[in-house]
Image (cartoon, rainbow, N blue to C red; front, side, top):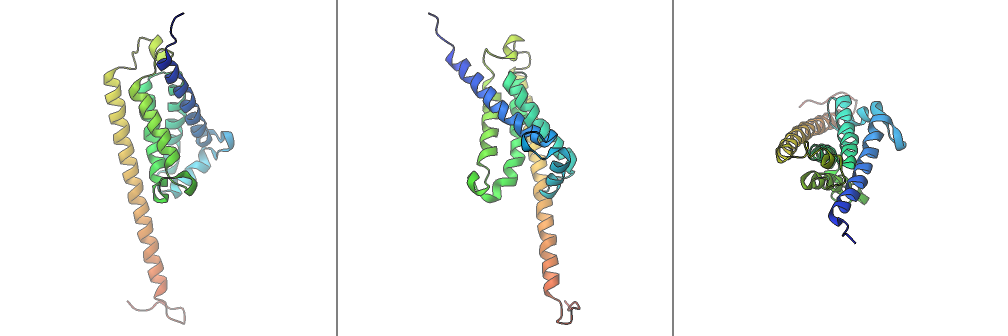
Length: 193
């Protein structure tokens, strides 16, 4: 009796499970499926979280998650799929980072886990039960790994950095407004500085 390719079966299970979760997460943003907000409300939420412009940010996050998830599940362009999903999750980690690690307190545990698994699959490759394998791994070559992860890391760093600057600027404006309100005279007029 031939031995089952356990490693390839394990990769298949990880790809389908992780890809399915990522697809559902992205479909919530893009289409409002599975109880999600849909693109317009997600765009508003992205703006409120410091991602500007909100609509393009929501579209990019949704496509990175849903598109990356479908490609991971199928094992198509696995390095690009893993990198895209990991990059999208980097933005989610940035949003949840102030709450600490654990998800029960609003932390980044869940998006970090999805990002790490997606990245790991992109680096490991899809195994033999995949469209990449059927196609002779034409989209699963070492150069694709370097290109995909380099581009995703650069894009994620730029997006997160821009968001962090927007959040800091909004906090500064809020602090200055509160200090300005604190200098009012009892009759409601502004005090002198």
